[in-house]
Image 1: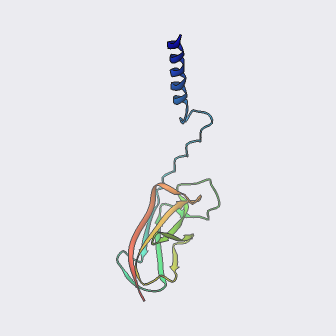
Image 2: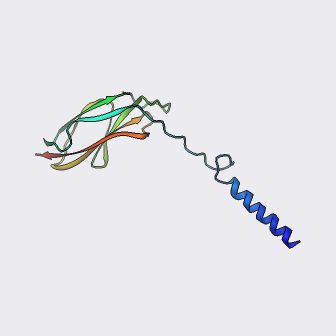
Image 3: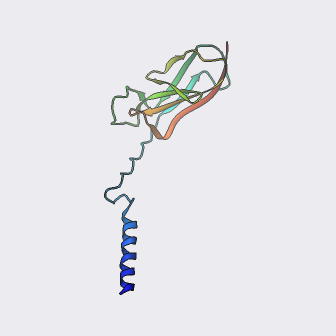
Amino acid sequence: MNRSIAAVAAAALLLAGCSSGGSGGSGGAAAPSPRPSSPAQIAIVTPTNGQVVKGPDVPLKLSLTGAKIVQPSTTNISPTKGHVHVSLDGQIVSMNFALHQPLHNVAAGTHTLRVEFVASDHQPFDPRVFQEIAFTVKK
C-alpha cells in the first residue's frame, strides 16, 4: 500500500512539473510575442566617427533607408515604420521624427552617440537597427 501511495505522489509531482510554465499551461504568464525584424538601415551622417566638432551645439544628420519615420501613435507595428531614439553617452536625449536635429549644450569632451530606429510602440526591432559612433566636442 505504501508503494502505491508513493507511486501516485510521484506521478502527481511529475504531472504538475510538466504542466507549469509551458506555453500550453493555464494560469501562467503568456510568453511575449517575438519582435519583428526590419529591413531598415540607419546611419549617422554627421558627426562622423572620431570627428572633432565645435560645441556646445552639435548638428545631427541621419540617413534612413528601407523604412519611413512616423509618429508613435499605434501598437500595430510595421517593420517599415517607426522613429529614431537618439542617445548621448547612454542616455536618451530625444525621440526623433526627423533626420536632422541639433544636439544642444553638449559638454566639451569625447561622447558616444547612438541612434536606433525603433517600432511605433517605442520597442526595438529584432535584430536591432542602430549605429553608434564616438565624437569629440571642443568649445
